[in-house]
Image (cartoon, rainbow over all chains, first blue to last red):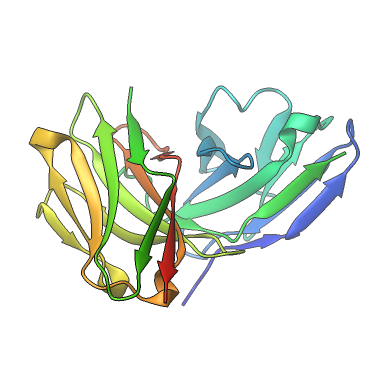
Length: 115
Length: 113
């Protein structure tokens, strides 16, 4: 069964450094998403992406964050100048369509630790 | 604004007992509702979803949930718990016109032998 993959599974970085989290969505899906889960807290929506554009973003997704689909298979989340509070599990998801009823398929997550 | 509230951050049941995980939603428009499960070190897997068709929704692994508009609830049940059901369960909501899914805080299910 097709699945969303994410790399790396765990990323450790120093405060102020830039990190890029990578995701390979399911191949025929057109909509891509990033969510994050700070330890002990809710899973929070960050951004959705379609046709090389951001379709919706949350208030968390400020200028520190950016997303890109650099080629036909990868979808990346870049965090510039990381802060301690960026430590979290980051989940990528994809869906066939962007409908609210459409199932979003999630990857296993990347645990980001900022020291 | 939409939100979901999961009652009980931890639920413990004996193997073979009924599983009941509670979820209440708040939405100004008809919602779409989801239950996801997360096993240790894995991503979120969809168990079932409500999309305004049948109010009783059957999902994978023997789980089902009933949409009750009058109670604004979407509780998850399974008649007989199995050890392999031990995981974290998330209720979530979305609505037409938006792309994001809003998650509850999660309920960790423990299954005792």
